[in-house]
Image (tube, rainbow, N blue to C red; front, side):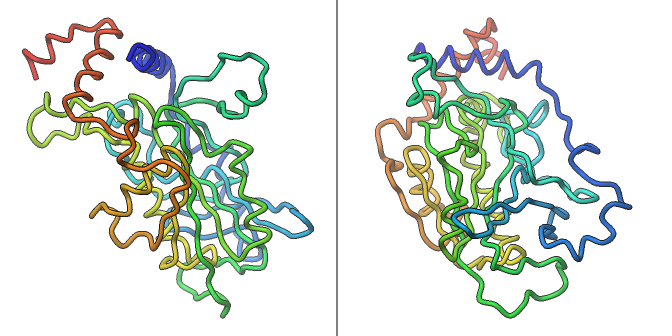
Amino acid sequence: MGQLSILCLFVTVCASVCGYSWPSDETTTKPSQFKDFHTDPLVVETTSGLVRGYSKTVLGREVHVFTGIPFAKPPIEQLRFKKPVPIDPWHGILDATKQPNSCFQERYEYFPGFEGEEMWNPNTNISEDCLYLNIWVPQRLRIRHHADKPTIDRPKVPVLIWIYGGGYMSGTATLDVYDADIIAATSDVIVASMQYRLGSFGFLYLNRYFPRGSDETPGNMGLWDQILAIRWIKDNADAFGGDPDLITLFGESAGGGSISIHLISPVTKGLVRRGIMQSGTMNAPWSYMSGERAEQIGKILIQDCGCNVSLLENSP
């Protein structure tokens, strides 16, 4: 409990200095720069806008990689502690060649210099603005440049969506061990992964203290992040050469726990075909807690932040 409250306090204080800067001229091109995008094999037209990835050679095979595609508005300010809101369409071509931010979390520094620990720490900037996804596509698939034109007559391939673990408190899709380039290079599958909010930003629950119907701190915001990302991937699978009806979730630890929830939830019904839980389930002792317990933890967070928790009871 003590470690959890300290983590929540840490991420809340750090969050106060974060801002939102997307989109900018650094991430999208000007109109004059994308008029001939039709001939660029690394440009894909998605439901949100055009994205340009990059190509890399893996085991002698080419893979097209798209990183840092936003699927939700940055969950900051009025959107903090709420369900994610779909991203607005952008103009120009989004530069999908840079790894996205990692969501706020505690860094493991119990064994300084130990690679076996450091490999699990975030390897990109930590920010509240972290709701992005990555996609790896085998080069032999012909991606679609036009939303109103069919793809070349070639069988669409299954899509694998990775959900990282970390006990809902840590983790990031950008870790080197989660790079799916080898899978894409050696298999007829498309692989995608997403970031989702962690700790208090992703799972704070105090909704009972707000007026009925309020969308404040509903809890499980991180799971709603996953759902929105899965829906975006399904809606755009065909544009990348994937089959929207052949989507499989796979993940470990909290990723496995999340998948077991998505497989039975009415909210995600019809979004995915299969799930692979490499470890972790929704009924693991660390994977869930009662609403009452979640409220207790939320109150501890309020106290640790120096706020008067009694105001929550007296003035909901």
